[in-house]
Length: 425
Image: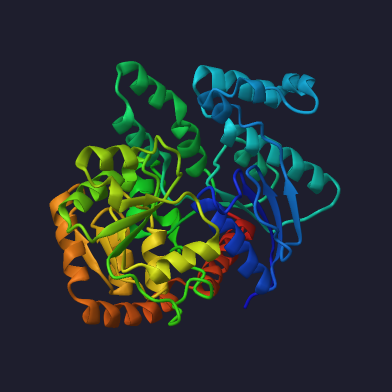
């Protein structure tokens, strides 16, 4: 290994239960630290689980006005315990931007992170590299202006989220709101001006190159990591006879949950679905299942801790990933790491993940009949299903175990640092 590096991560959201970027941050920092690198973290709310392996973790404030505004929680709009902090420049910017329908979080966080980093450098702290996690606010270019090379991780560009938002929109005004909300212009501008964009699949790399116009030679595909020491089989856990497990948000059209509910309605009565998603009564999956008469076979259990999620993977007969797009497809990889077969669509990176694991069935996206047939095929072949899933475990460990991903990421760091220090002629 080359010499240890001093790295600063900047991540505008850090909680592991609020999205893949929190899982990515926690695990990558852990394994880079295990390799001997010195890692500091600047992170916004919701904040991560404790990270004792990091050299330091500084939690940066963010009032998240946009979320409170959309939730109609007007009482929470003023900062506590000092409401006058609303007039601090970045707080006031976030409030006004949220009112106008913009997502201010990436820009505001990047400026707060820039302020902290500039202060540290003035005090003599030195970093070899800064790793931005999917923020790409203009403040990241300020970090680079401090003389620091910058890499970023983009699991998929925001154009994918905007496309999903358009699918939810019902009026022209809704569509205008979707156009304004996502800071795609800012993120693409920043992505084209930093040293490297890391991503998790060839499918995602293609979208970043086409949608953000990042040159292909500055995109590094290092895959995503799976905590294979946590997501692993347990022979003591008895498999259910006909339980489909799905991990995904029904409110996000890209996750394809509506298609899965329609497939459930086509399957025999003894087949039931467990959905790991927000368990509120208005969950769209509940509504669609009631319309199709299969709501008695749907169980929405809310967001669950990691240990419970692992148990669900181990118990499930199979895991369904019906997405319309995935930049990686973490539930598919986690399921195979637990020795559980999967049925996925052919969307985005899912083909890559399924081919790597070699376990499961792939069907066309947005096709309830094909999805139901794929699930039925798996349910009808228990012995073959189990043998294929057992082989997939070894392949997932070889490809996606976090120590391997951390080593690949550190190799990108080393190349970037060397390039940055080499005079350009």
